[in-house]
Each structure stands twice: as C-alpha cells, then as structure tokens.
Image: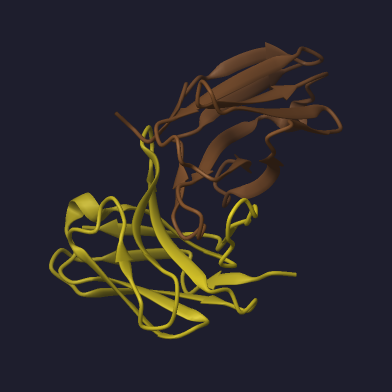
Length: 116
Length: 111
C-alpha cells in the first residue's frame, strides 16, 4: 500500500514561530505537493517538487518555503507563522507521468495547524 | 477565473436518486482528469480517472467533453455512504507535475 505520512495530525503554534511540517512517502514517487485546504476555497497548491532539490511555486507560496533534500521527504516551512496560516495542510505524492498517462495523487492524513 | 470550477453544493438528494455534477476547466491543453472523494475530516482519495471515451465503474460514470472543457460525474442509485465531497482534478501539463483541484461539491444523501 502506498503510504504518505505527515508528521503531526494537530499542531498549535504561536504567531511569529517558525513551523516545520514534514511529509514522507514510501513509493519512490518523483512528485510531491503541499496544499492547504480551507472551507469554501478547496485545496490550494502552495509548492510542489518534481525531483530532489527541485521546487516550484504553486498558487499561494507567500509566507512559505519548502525543502526536498531526499526523494522521500518534502518539508513545508512557515518562516514566521501568522494567524491567516491557520488551516488544514495536506501533502501528496505521485509518479511523474507523461502524455496522457493518468497519474493518481496519494495524500497524507493532513495536519491541522492552528496559529494563535 | 479559477482554473477548475465546481458548484460547491450542497446537493441534498434522497437515497436511490441519480445525481450529476459538472466541473469546468480553463486550460484547453490539460492532459488528465480525475474525480476524488473526500470524507469529512479525511484526506482526498481517488474515485476514478476520466478518459476521453468516458468510463464507468459500477454506479459511477465519468465523462469528458474537451470541446466544452468540462468533466462530469454521474452517480446512479445513490447510497447513504456516497455522502462526501467530490473534487474535480485536472493535470495541467503533459509531465503531470502540476495537479489542480476544484474546491469540491458537497453531496448529502438522505434516507
């Protein structure tokens, strides 16, 4: 079974703290993604990575950075947490498909982050 | 305009009914399409891929209309367990590296 594991289910952090969210996948997937999910807004892509040390901005990268030093691990960093970053964060991974190949994304269980 | 748009619902239908959702996408070069299901407080999981010729999996039928840039999901003989949020997903480029999710359509099946 594919497994995508996020380090925490629930986190509470203070405004201004540096926050690390970790994600590990065990399927040797090339692609990894970080999304946040908010009511009425759906899943919004923060960053993604298609290879080790490679990263690309998604739709809402401001206030976030990422690190991919190893293929199986993709970290999301909140440099200085703010209350508007309170959200559900979802990590996903997929194989790198091509052409019309349909590639499924597998998700971790999510981290609910509250910034107070 | 959002890249992938869905009616947020909620759709509230009786058990046994047939229900259909549409999803529109803006990038005509989009390569692959999916429907995901997300239960309350859980992560999204793949329901089915959407092929150009349309595809069926039991009570679920997915269709793709490239000319009008939409995909659809039809659920026949709906069950209480079908209650969930259904997310439309589009891969924007041929490398499948950028997956875009719609905001989801909430479906509630009542007894």
